[in-house]
Structure formats: C-alpha cells, structure tokens
Amino acid sequence: MNPFTKSNLDPVSDTALMFKVKAGDIDKLSLLYERHNKILFGFFFRMSGNREVSEDLVQTVFYRILKNRRQYKGKGKFSSWMFQIAHNLWADHYKKNQRTDLKDNMETWELKDGLSADEQIEREEQLRQLRNALYKLSDEKREVLILSRYQGLKYSEIASILNLTEGAIKIRVFRALAELRKIFVQIDNNGYEG
Image 1 (cartoon, helix red, strand yellow):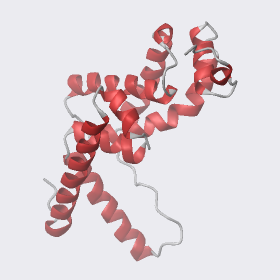
Image 2 (cartoon, helix red, strand yellow; image 1 turned 90 degrees about the vertical axis):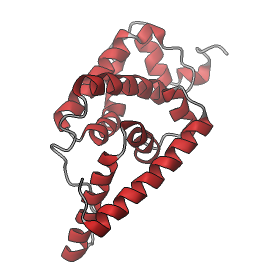
Image 3 (cartoon, one colour; image 1 turned 135 degrees about the vertical axis):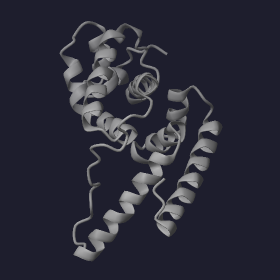
Image 4 (cartoon, helix red, strand yellow; image 1 turned 180 degrees about the vertical axis):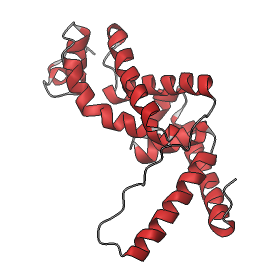
C-alpha cells in the first residue's frame, strides 16, 4: 500500500504530520508534540515516579523522532511508533539508573469530585497502596499495565512496541494484574510496604 494515499495525508492526522516532518517540514513536529507530550509524560511518570526525569524523557523521545524521521514508514498508528521509541528510551534510561528515585516526587492521583473528606482520605490511601503495589512489580509487568490500562493501547499495539505476539502480551497483562492484586491485598491487609 502506498503510504501517500489520500487517507494518510489528512492534514489533521498524525501520520500526515509525520510524513511532512519526514519530508523536511520540521515545524510540524511541534503539532505532534502538542498532541502527544502529555500522554508520553504520563507513561514516563508512571514508570519512574519522577517529574523531572519524565519531562526529560519526553523531550528525548521527540528528539529521537526528529533524528529518526527518515525511518518512519507510516505503517500502523503514529502513536505505536512513538511508544516504540519511548519503550526503547525507558529501557536505556533504566539500565543506566537501575530504578533510582522511583518513588520520589509522586503526586496525588486525581480524585473524583463530590467525595466527602472521609471518602477522599480513604481514596488517597487506596491510591497510595496501589502505587506502592505497582512499583513492586518488575518493570516488564508495570510497563504492560501502564501501556494497556493507563495509555489505552490495544494488545496488538503493545505487541508491536515490545516485539512480542499479541498472545504473549495478553498473558503478561493477566499475570501482571494477578501479581498486582496479590501485592495490593498484602499491603491492604498487613500494611506491608516492603
């Protein structure tokens, strides 16, 4: 299939914008940045728990997109290609830093409006316990949960990002959720923080 078909050149599509970046219209990268920087920040923040590291990694993803723009083929969703870069960047960062400062700078997760003070306190405690449980998972398990549950990527997209089969991703998500539940219950019942 020709990547320059009319549907791929829709002026508002990510693919069309990336093809313009690839062709040398570097200014279009700012539009892609505006569309995706918060999503990437959320991914990195949930992986690292560190605001400054997350901001730096988002910038680095877009630097790598610019640097590797000529390799963009337009197959699949732009966001899948972007998350492939983010996944590789996180792996590089993790190897260099070996899980340092994972729990620093964690902000309170959003609470629903209309909760009483007691409900908000209970909700904050549950979210704190969930965060602690999430950080007790291996990076591999935490990443598939973040990509599937928080970033909303389909299993097929995650499989493409991680170079695995869709079946392998389903198994990883299932196992990660089972382990997360086990750790969460242990924290909730025993106050275990590890």
